[in-house]
Length: 263
Image (cartoon, rainbow, N blue to C red):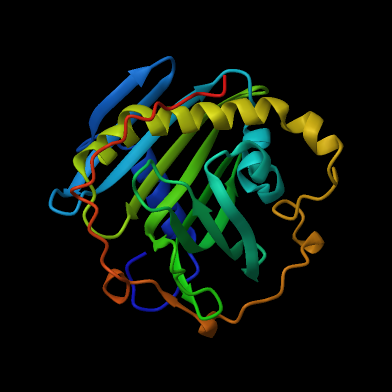
Protein backbone atom coordinates (compact mmCIF):
# COMPACT_ATOMS: atom_id res chain seq x y z
CA UNK A 1 0.00 0.00 0.00
CA UNK A 2 1.73 3.18 -1.15
CA UNK A 3 -0.72 5.96 -0.33
CA UNK A 4 -0.01 8.67 2.24
CA UNK A 5 -2.91 7.85 4.53
CA UNK A 6 -3.96 4.52 5.98
CA UNK A 7 -6.56 2.80 3.82
CA UNK A 8 -8.50 -0.40 4.35
CA UNK A 9 -7.90 -2.66 1.33
CA UNK A 10 -10.80 -2.86 -1.11
CA UNK A 11 -11.73 -5.58 -3.62
CA UNK A 12 -9.29 -4.14 -6.16
CA UNK A 13 -6.42 -4.43 -3.66
CA UNK A 14 -7.23 -8.09 -3.03
CA UNK A 15 -7.50 -8.75 -6.78
CA UNK A 16 -4.12 -7.09 -7.35
CA UNK A 17 -2.51 -9.19 -4.61
CA UNK A 18 -3.98 -12.37 -6.10
CA UNK A 19 -2.68 -11.47 -9.57
CA UNK A 20 0.83 -10.95 -8.20
CA UNK A 21 0.71 -14.28 -6.36
CA UNK A 22 -0.15 -16.04 -9.63
CA UNK A 23 2.27 -14.14 -11.89
CA UNK A 24 5.71 -15.67 -12.57
CA UNK A 25 6.98 -13.20 -15.17
CA UNK A 26 9.86 -11.10 -13.87
CA UNK A 27 10.58 -13.48 -10.98
CA UNK A 28 13.72 -15.62 -10.58
CA UNK A 29 13.34 -19.15 -9.25
CA UNK A 30 15.83 -19.77 -6.43
CA UNK A 31 14.42 -23.01 -5.01
CA UNK A 32 12.21 -25.77 -6.41
CA UNK A 33 11.94 -29.02 -4.50
CA UNK A 34 9.29 -31.37 -3.08
CA UNK A 35 6.31 -29.28 -4.12
CA UNK A 36 7.76 -26.00 -2.83
CA UNK A 37 9.00 -23.21 -5.13
CA UNK A 38 10.65 -19.93 -4.13
CA UNK A 39 11.06 -16.86 -6.34
CA UNK A 40 13.00 -13.64 -5.72
CA UNK A 41 12.51 -10.27 -7.36
CA UNK A 42 15.31 -7.82 -6.56
CA UNK A 43 14.15 -4.23 -6.21
CA UNK A 44 17.20 -2.47 -4.80
CA UNK A 45 20.56 -4.26 -4.73
CA UNK A 46 22.09 -1.51 -2.63
CA UNK A 47 19.71 -2.03 0.27
CA UNK A 48 18.84 -5.71 -0.25
CA UNK A 49 15.22 -4.66 -0.71
CA UNK A 50 13.47 -7.49 -2.51
CA UNK A 51 10.25 -9.36 -2.96
CA UNK A 52 10.05 -13.04 -2.14
CA UNK A 53 7.33 -15.45 -3.19
CA UNK A 54 7.00 -19.00 -1.94
CA UNK A 55 4.41 -21.52 -3.14
CA UNK A 56 3.75 -24.89 -1.53
CA UNK A 57 1.47 -27.70 -2.67
CA UNK A 58 -0.24 -29.27 0.37
CA UNK A 59 -1.68 -32.70 -0.38
CA UNK A 60 -2.82 -33.34 3.18
CA UNK A 61 -4.33 -30.02 4.33
CA UNK A 62 -7.64 -28.35 3.46
CA UNK A 63 -7.83 -24.68 2.54
CA UNK A 64 -10.12 -24.12 5.53
CA UNK A 65 -7.60 -25.55 7.99
CA UNK A 66 -4.76 -23.54 6.46
CA UNK A 67 -6.83 -20.37 6.79
CA UNK A 68 -7.55 -21.10 10.47
CA UNK A 69 -3.91 -21.82 11.28
CA UNK A 70 -2.66 -18.61 9.66
CA UNK A 71 -5.21 -16.61 11.66
CA UNK A 72 -4.96 -18.28 15.06
CA UNK A 73 -2.58 -16.11 17.10
CA UNK A 74 -2.69 -18.38 20.14
CA UNK A 75 -1.73 -21.42 18.05
CA UNK A 76 1.08 -19.48 16.32
CA UNK A 77 2.77 -19.03 19.68
CA UNK A 78 2.91 -22.82 19.92
CA UNK A 79 4.24 -23.81 16.49
CA UNK A 80 6.20 -20.76 15.29
CA UNK A 81 9.64 -21.09 16.92
CA UNK A 82 10.81 -17.79 15.42
CA UNK A 83 8.11 -15.74 17.15
CA UNK A 84 9.13 -13.64 20.14
CA UNK A 85 5.82 -11.93 20.76
CA UNK A 86 2.56 -11.64 18.83
CA UNK A 87 -0.81 -10.16 19.73
CA UNK A 88 -3.80 -8.35 18.24
CA UNK A 89 -4.11 -4.66 19.11
CA UNK A 90 -7.59 -3.80 17.86
CA UNK A 91 -9.99 -3.96 14.94
CA UNK A 92 -11.07 -1.56 12.22
CA UNK A 93 -13.79 -3.59 10.47
CA UNK A 94 -15.13 -7.16 10.54
CA UNK A 95 -12.22 -8.27 8.35
CA UNK A 96 -9.45 -5.81 9.24
CA UNK A 97 -7.39 -5.57 12.41
CA UNK A 98 -4.06 -4.22 13.68
CA UNK A 99 -1.47 -6.43 15.32
CA UNK A 100 2.08 -6.65 16.62
CA UNK A 101 4.61 -9.33 15.71
CA UNK A 102 8.29 -9.71 16.63
CA UNK A 103 10.61 -12.45 15.47
CA UNK A 104 14.12 -13.83 15.82
CA UNK A 105 16.55 -13.11 13.00
CA UNK A 106 19.57 -15.22 11.98
CA UNK A 107 22.53 -14.42 14.20
CA UNK A 108 24.28 -12.00 14.44
CA UNK A 109 21.46 -9.75 13.12
CA UNK A 110 19.23 -7.89 15.54
CA UNK A 111 15.69 -9.18 15.96
CA UNK A 112 12.88 -7.43 14.10
CA UNK A 113 9.30 -6.39 14.82
CA UNK A 114 6.36 -4.89 12.94
CA UNK A 115 2.99 -3.30 13.57
CA UNK A 116 0.66 -4.13 10.70
CA UNK A 117 -2.83 -3.54 9.41
CA UNK A 118 -4.13 -6.94 8.32
CA UNK A 119 -7.13 -7.69 6.13
CA UNK A 120 -8.61 -10.98 5.00
CA UNK A 121 -11.18 -12.10 2.45
CA UNK A 122 -12.65 -15.43 1.37
CA UNK A 123 -12.98 -15.53 -2.43
CA UNK A 124 -15.20 -18.48 -3.27
CA UNK A 125 -13.36 -21.44 -1.74
CA UNK A 126 -10.04 -19.56 -1.76
CA UNK A 127 -8.71 -17.15 0.86
CA UNK A 128 -6.41 -14.13 1.01
CA UNK A 129 -4.77 -12.64 4.11
CA UNK A 130 -2.54 -9.59 3.60
CA UNK A 131 -0.97 -6.79 5.61
CA UNK A 132 1.13 -3.64 5.50
CA UNK A 133 2.96 -1.64 8.16
CA UNK A 134 1.31 1.15 10.13
CA UNK A 135 2.30 3.38 13.03
CA UNK A 136 0.39 3.38 16.31
CA UNK A 137 1.43 5.80 19.07
CA UNK A 138 1.05 3.16 21.80
CA UNK A 139 3.44 0.75 20.04
CA UNK A 140 6.58 2.72 19.09
CA UNK A 141 9.86 1.07 18.03
CA UNK A 142 11.72 -0.72 20.84
CA UNK A 143 15.36 -0.08 21.74
CA UNK A 144 16.33 -3.75 21.49
CA UNK A 145 14.50 -4.36 18.18
CA UNK A 146 14.73 -3.12 14.61
CA UNK A 147 11.32 -1.96 13.37
CA UNK A 148 10.93 -3.52 9.94
CA UNK A 149 8.42 -2.41 7.33
CA UNK A 150 5.97 -4.64 5.55
CA UNK A 151 5.34 -2.84 2.27
CA UNK A 152 2.91 -5.65 1.50
CA UNK A 153 2.95 -9.19 2.80
CA UNK A 154 0.38 -11.93 2.75
CA UNK A 155 -0.91 -15.37 1.87
CA UNK A 156 -3.18 -16.76 -0.80
CA UNK A 157 -4.75 -20.16 -0.14
CA UNK A 158 -6.23 -21.97 -3.14
CA UNK A 159 -8.75 -24.74 -2.57
CA UNK A 160 -7.79 -27.83 -4.59
CA UNK A 161 -10.04 -30.45 -3.04
CA UNK A 162 -11.41 -31.68 0.32
CA UNK A 163 -7.93 -32.18 1.77
CA UNK A 164 -5.69 -30.41 -0.70
CA UNK A 165 -4.65 -26.77 -1.14
CA UNK A 166 -1.91 -24.56 -2.54
CA UNK A 167 -0.39 -21.91 -0.27
CA UNK A 168 1.40 -18.90 -1.73
CA UNK A 169 3.32 -16.50 0.51
CA UNK A 170 4.24 -13.12 -0.99
CA UNK A 171 6.34 -10.58 0.87
CA UNK A 172 7.84 -7.21 0.13
CA UNK A 173 9.57 -6.25 3.36
CA UNK A 174 12.03 -3.47 4.10
CA UNK A 175 14.15 -4.92 6.93
CA UNK A 176 15.67 -1.46 7.46
CA UNK A 177 19.21 -0.58 6.60
CA UNK A 178 21.65 -2.59 4.54
CA UNK A 179 21.66 -6.33 5.00
CA UNK A 180 24.46 -8.67 3.99
CA UNK A 181 23.83 -10.62 0.79
CA UNK A 182 23.93 -13.92 2.69
CA UNK A 183 20.71 -12.97 4.47
CA UNK A 184 18.80 -12.65 1.20
CA UNK A 185 20.30 -15.88 -0.10
CA UNK A 186 19.53 -17.73 3.12
CA UNK A 187 15.94 -16.47 3.07
CA UNK A 188 15.28 -17.81 -0.40
CA UNK A 189 17.28 -21.04 -0.20
CA UNK A 190 16.60 -22.13 3.35
CA UNK A 191 14.42 -20.02 5.62
CA UNK A 192 11.38 -19.61 3.35
CA UNK A 193 11.05 -23.33 2.42
CA UNK A 194 11.60 -24.30 6.05
CA UNK A 195 8.93 -21.83 7.22
CA UNK A 196 6.41 -23.20 4.70
CA UNK A 197 7.15 -26.75 5.83
CA UNK A 198 6.53 -25.72 9.44
CA UNK A 199 3.17 -24.18 8.50
CA UNK A 200 2.14 -27.40 6.77
CA UNK A 201 3.20 -29.45 9.80
CA UNK A 202 1.29 -27.11 12.12
CA UNK A 203 -1.86 -27.60 10.03
CA UNK A 204 -1.71 -31.38 10.54
CA UNK A 205 -1.85 -30.92 14.32
CA UNK A 206 -4.31 -28.02 14.46
CA UNK A 207 -7.60 -29.90 14.69
CA UNK A 208 -6.48 -31.91 17.71
CA UNK A 209 -5.02 -28.81 19.40
CA UNK A 210 -8.10 -26.67 18.72
CA UNK A 211 -10.40 -29.25 20.30
CA UNK A 212 -8.59 -28.56 23.59
CA UNK A 213 -8.22 -24.79 23.22
CA UNK A 214 -11.43 -22.79 22.93
CA UNK A 215 -12.57 -24.89 19.97
CA UNK A 216 -15.53 -22.72 18.95
CA UNK A 217 -13.60 -19.44 19.03
CA UNK A 218 -12.76 -18.33 15.47
CA UNK A 219 -13.39 -14.58 15.19
CA UNK A 220 -11.88 -14.50 11.70
CA UNK A 221 -14.89 -16.59 10.63
CA UNK A 222 -17.40 -15.30 13.19
CA UNK A 223 -16.65 -11.58 13.79
CA UNK A 224 -19.34 -11.38 16.47
CA UNK A 225 -16.99 -13.38 18.70
CA UNK A 226 -14.23 -10.76 18.75
CA UNK A 227 -13.42 -8.92 21.95
CA UNK A 228 -10.89 -6.56 20.34
CA UNK A 229 -11.46 -2.84 20.87
CA UNK A 230 -12.31 -0.71 17.85
CA UNK A 231 -9.42 1.46 16.63
CA UNK A 232 -10.33 4.75 14.92
CA UNK A 233 -8.55 5.02 11.57
CA UNK A 234 -7.24 8.45 12.61
CA UNK A 235 -5.04 6.80 15.28
CA UNK A 236 -2.98 5.10 12.55
CA UNK A 237 -0.54 6.37 9.94
CA UNK A 238 1.52 4.62 7.28
CA UNK A 239 4.92 3.50 8.60
CA UNK A 240 7.62 5.07 6.48
CA UNK A 241 11.27 4.07 6.28
CA UNK A 242 12.64 7.61 6.64
CA UNK A 243 11.09 7.95 10.11
CA UNK A 244 13.03 4.97 11.48
CA UNK A 245 16.62 4.55 12.56
CA UNK A 246 18.81 3.33 9.72
CA UNK A 247 20.57 0.11 10.77
CA UNK A 248 23.60 -0.96 8.75
CA UNK A 249 24.33 -4.65 9.22
CA UNK A 250 25.86 -5.18 5.78
CA UNK A 251 29.29 -6.10 7.15
CA UNK A 252 28.07 -8.77 9.55
CA UNK A 253 29.31 -12.23 8.69
CA UNK A 254 27.14 -15.30 9.08
CA UNK A 255 27.87 -17.21 12.26
CA UNK A 256 28.95 -20.84 12.20
CA UNK A 257 25.90 -21.82 14.21
CA UNK A 258 24.01 -24.56 12.37
CA UNK A 259 20.28 -24.35 11.83
CA UNK A 260 18.42 -27.29 13.26
CA UNK A 261 15.14 -28.42 11.87
CA UNK A 262 12.74 -29.67 14.50
CA UNK A 263 11.72 -32.64 12.36
